[in-house]
Figure 1: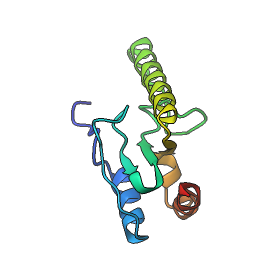
Figure 2: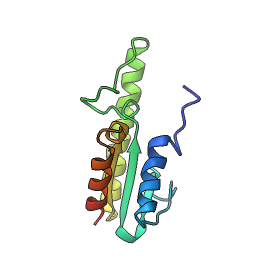
Figure 3: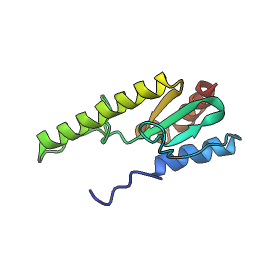
Length: 124
């Protein structure tokens, strides 16, 4: 598990490349903002989080599977991640930022284009 990256993941890079190709300019992982958002579009006062389905407990997703060993520990960890996410979203909203979240399952081949196009329409 120590080999799993928290920054510059494939789904995150995919979203960044798409946004850049459409002319959007952004900054990444700004430490001054709560939760260090993956993508920050200052011009539009929008932040985007790209979450892994497992790590953030994406309910109803086939990629969110609870491990068979140390189940209680994992459930607690995932619950804490979700709680921190909600706190960060609330704090960012209070600061006037629009918060968007994309889960990795929404970037699979069959629905990637739809997800990314919805992202563009929701930025404004």
